[in-house]
Image (tube, rainbow, N blue to C red; front, top):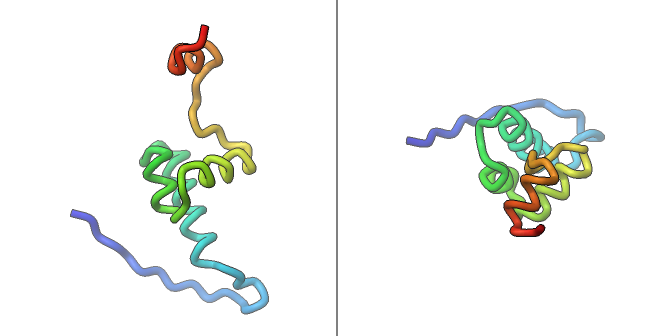
Length: 79
């Protein structure tokens, strides 16, 4: 059973921007890094498509798929 929790945070208006979007993204990245959710689920939680989420991870220098070069070639069927 899934449960949601509402969290209220006061943010000065000059820092506000799109706080909800940024918090969702940060939360999704944290869950992904800790191995709680897959990259696909983290993208959903962040409200992004998989490509955009992986691009955001890459921008932050976070590896989306921790494969070695050999494992990646094997997974993709490349010799």
